[in-house]
Image (cartoon, rainbow, N blue to C red; front, side, top):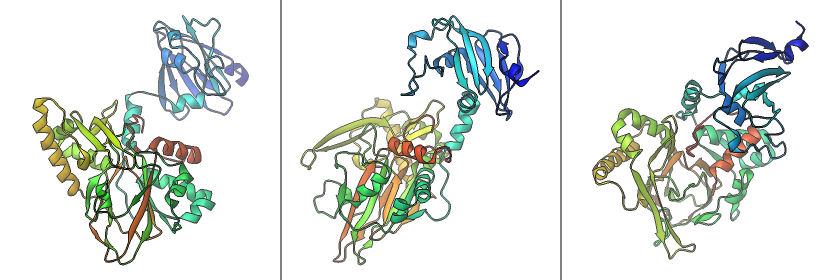
Length: 417
C-alpha cells in the first residue's frame, strides 16, 4: 500500500495496525475494547498508554490550544467522564483522534507523535524518572568559571548553568571588587529574589548583628529563609573585601537531598516522623531595617506523589515552638536529634576556602551550608550576597540548554524533578 494511503488510513478501535510516518517512524496503535485507552508502541519499542480523558484534556488542535499563549482554552466541564475514543487517524507526524460523546460537534484532536512519546505517564515511567533525578554525590573538584568568560562565552555560560543544576554549586573567579557586584552576577541568570534582606545583603562581623552569620562564630548546617512559602533558590556569596590575614571561615556544603535518602534507608521510622510532623520556622525581628514577623509550618522532609523526596527544610537556628499532637512531640525530638547527628557525621561534604574575588553560587534548596569560626587578625571580612528564585533558575536553564540537561531534583517540591 502506498505511504500516502497508509497515512490517511482510519484506525478504528476494533483493531491495531502499523503506521509509517513521513520521518520514517513507525507506530503500532491499539485501542482497548472499552474504548477508554489508546496503546501506542513507538519505533524505539517504547510503549505508552493514553486515557481517552487525558487525550481530550491535552488536545493540540487550534480550537483547544491557543497558539499565541500556548495555553489550553478548553473549559473543564467539556471533559465529561463518559467520553470514549471513537476513531484514530494518522496524518504525517500527528495522530488525529475523535471522541464519542464529545460536546464539541465535529471536533478532531491533534497530537504530535514526538510530543506523545515525550509525555507518557504511568508507574514505571515515574519510577524511572524519579530514580534518575535523585542527586548523586559529586566526584572530583567543583566546577570553576571566570566571570569574564560567563559574560562573553555562551558555551561557558551554559556549562555554568548545568554545573549549578547537576552538582548543586559552582565557583566564579575574578569577580570585580565593585559594590553590589553580586547582583550583577545574579542577573546573568535572572534578577535577584527580593526578600527581608532586600535585593542583596552585606555579611560583615557585628557584635549585635540581626543574623548569626554576621558574627565571628561558626554556623551549623542550615538552609536560608525556610519561613517563606517559597524559600530562596540559588544563593550567591561574593568575597567582596577579604584580607589575606583573616583565618578560618571555610564554607562547608552538604547535599541534603542525598543525605535525606541515606537517612531514610538507615532510620526509616525516624524519617517517617520528620516527613509527617511539621516543624515551625520563624523569624520575628521588628528592629531590623526591614521588620519581619514571619513563621511557616512544614515537615522537614517533603514527599511527592510517589513518595520521592521533593524537598528538605532544615534550619535549627530559627525553629520556633513545635505545634503538634501530644504523642508526636517526643518522637519528633528524637528523630530531629538523630538527623542532626547524621548530618554532622555524613561522609560526603565539600569544604571550600575562598578568597577575595571569588563568588560561590549554590542551590540553597538542595545544599545545606555552614561556616567555620574565623579570626579577623586586624583585617576585614566583607561578603555580599543575594538570592535567585529556584523556578526562575530552572526556566533559564531550559531556555539556554534545552534538552541538553539530565533530570535532577532541585528540592523545590516539584513532583517531576
